[in-house]
Image (tube, rainbow, N blue to C red):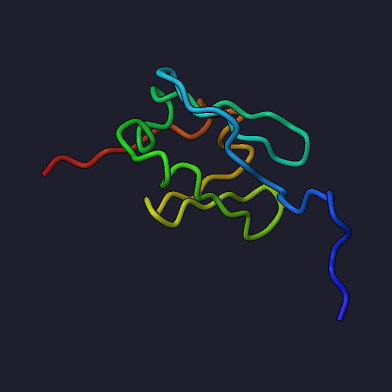
Length: 88
């Protein structure tokens, strides 16, 4: 049985900051910002749900507690992916 050496960072993605303006995500040494204006799903979530992020495959991020899937491109260029809402 082998294991990783102590001190190696095994996280490919992590939330590094939550502010009144949005959420910062660090993925593969690249910092990405998600404003609440562009990504409103995060605004009223508990911290635990926001920090629980997975990267099922490179550049694809998933928050299972709030069922949100985003790609790196969506985060970097939210204007290319306008939000759609449905009236009930």
